[in-house]
Amino acid sequence: MATKKQNTEIVSLFEEKAGAGIGEVSADDLATPRIVMIQPGSPQIKKSSTKYLADASVGDLLFTATNTIVDGEEGIRFLPVYFDRNYIEWNLRENGGGFVAAHPKDTQLLGETQRDAQFRDIRTYSDGRQTELQNTANHYGYAIIEGSPQRCVINMTRSQLKKSRGWLGMINGTRLNGKNGEYTPPAHSHFYLIQTEEVSATGKSSYYNYHITQERILGNEEVDLFREADDFSKFCEGGGMQAMLSSSEATEAKTALENQSSKDWE
Image (cartoon, rainbow, N blue to C red):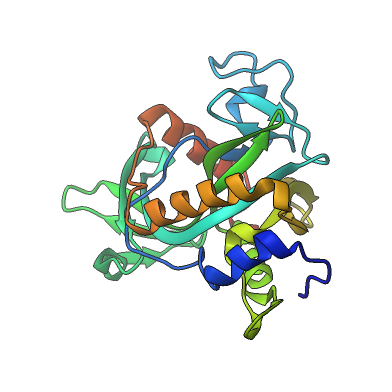
């Protein structure tokens, strides 16, 4: 993916940071605030739930820090700064559900799991308790919420992993021409538009997934944002974004995922 129109001042900064923003470390993370999708089973659309939001609809996007709802068709502009991947361990819903722990992407615990009929990696403890390990992609960056950039993370799992790989492909495929020739600018050189799209499967209930497109390159007037994003990228790369997910938020995230079709997740 090539970008033709360039702003010389900020592009010179991009070249200094060529290739940055998409490295991985093994930091355990599922940090808040987050951007999540409202699914058919999400508590935000259930009047009986303490998480109920009157203006929420299936397919919308939620910024958890302020409970801000954004129409999924309108989408959220997002400036990525860093990516990593890990495994999140959850108690099975039939065992009460809930967050257990975050494990590095190379965890040896995968050797203790068995794939069940719903394509879940199930870990069985000596006392018979069972948990699931979910492969989770974490995209850190700035979401533009009501006109202001807000630090957050988008966590993707199951069918969303394909969207994550496509997003990384867009980032890696972006090229700019610099004084030393063509190079890959840092992830935080471009804004991406995060929208949602309905997915239907024969014989199954529909659910929503992400739709991600590259929107535009940063302009010279956004040098300060780029520098701040670069600092955030370094913070993440140094392992600064550790597991900060509260029990209630973890359960909410799990509930949303469980209301998607397990077969469509693969």
